[in-house]
Image 1 (tube, rainbow, N blue to C red):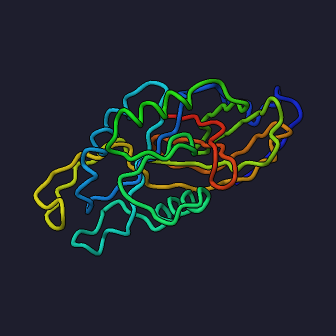
Image 2: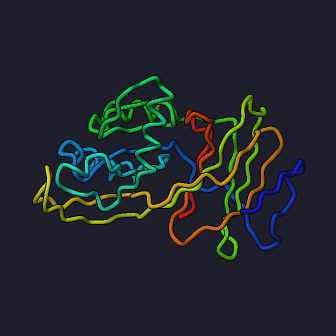
Length: 230
């Protein structure tokens, strides 16, 4: 990972890298599990949100229900840790599925479509941070500017996901179901810290497939900006 901070927005990271504003939107994180009987309706809602303009929907599969009979094929301990960090930041003692975190702030039950849509609507609108992304020779070029400058620093995160995967569940609470999962997160990494005063340019390795960049206040707290390259 290589980071460059520039005071001039006209600076080019690479002569052939075409930096552009792309597919920006409100981030909706679904915390779900293949072993949770309450989750399929939320997984269906995620399929709708994945196609909704102005929304970047991301499904994070947690591992804390694996013990009840079915080991989630997409679960990662880091996703459970992230959900716990949200709960800690909010002063909550419990986590659950399905839960949606909208914009890094609103906490909504994932099987309540009207509440989810209301949280998305409340999070929409122009923010202080502008993002531009580009791929260049297998690397991701990230460019950000805050106007006005941020009062506190933020983290820059890179997320990759699968568009869709069908899973046959043969044990546990959802035994016998075939569930289509959408925007399944496979990797979520923090690639840098940013004070939010000077413009940021950052270059990092990235694999093939859709990639999302998130600029988020520490906590985790409010998501200041998010952009996606498909």
